[in-house]
Length: 278
Image (cartoon, rainbow, N blue to C red; front, side, top):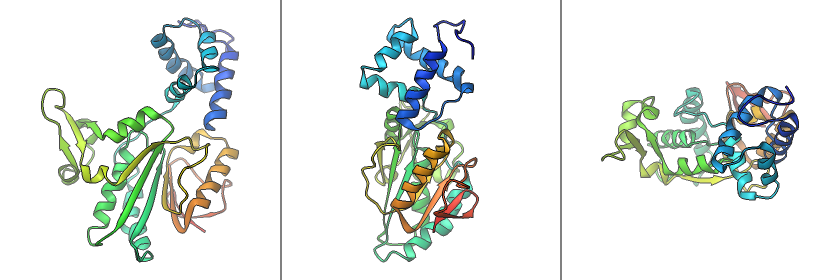
C-alpha cells in the first residue's frame, strides 16, 4: 500500500490503519490491505456529504461523534442479498426443520433469528417459508427476529418495499400471495411485502459483538455470509454464543463459503452449510 494515494482526498497508511482498527474494535470485521480501495471509495462519499477535504479531519470527527460512528459503520458494511438465496436452506427449513421442531413443541412455539438480515430479503423469505410449512399446523406461534449492524438497511427492511426487479426471482404464486403492487406515480414499479409477513418479524439494529437483548432459547439461527468478515477468534466466540442461546435441538444455517471446521465443536454438520446443535 502506497503511503499516499493520488486521489481526490489524501489517504495515508496511518489513516487506513486507524480505520481498520476502529472497525475491528467495533464490529469484529477484519479489513485486510486488499480492502483499501473499498474503504477509500465508501468513505470518500461520506467526506463529500460532510463537505470535508481531508481524511484526517474526518478521523478526528470519528473520535468525538457517536452518531458519525454509526454512519461510518453503515458505510463500510456490505449488504448483498436476495429472496430465496441459497434455496436448499429454505427447502430444508420447510421440509425438515420446522416440522421436526413443531413435533417436539406441544405449544407449537418457535423462535427464529436472522442475524445479518440486510435489507430484509432473508427474514421475509423465512416468513414465507414458515407460512407454507405451517399451512396444516393450527395455532402455531412462530416469530422471527431480524437484526443487522447497519441501521439504514434495518429501516429499509422494516418498510418492506422493493423494486419489482428484486421480486422477479420469487415465483408468481408467492408474489401473488405475499406481495402487493404499488400504485400511483410514486409507487409504480414497487412491491410491498404483505402485512401477514411483516407481523411475524421484529427488526432491530444489533452489533453481534455487543450484548444481545434476547435471552433465548432460540430454535433456528440464520447467520449467512456474516462471519467471513471476522477473524477465527471472533468466529469462535460468536458461534459459542450461538450454541449457548440455541435450544438443544436447534438448527444453525451459515453461508455458502462458511464453515465451522476448526471453529466450533458444538454443532454437527447435517447438510450443505446446515448444522444441528450437539
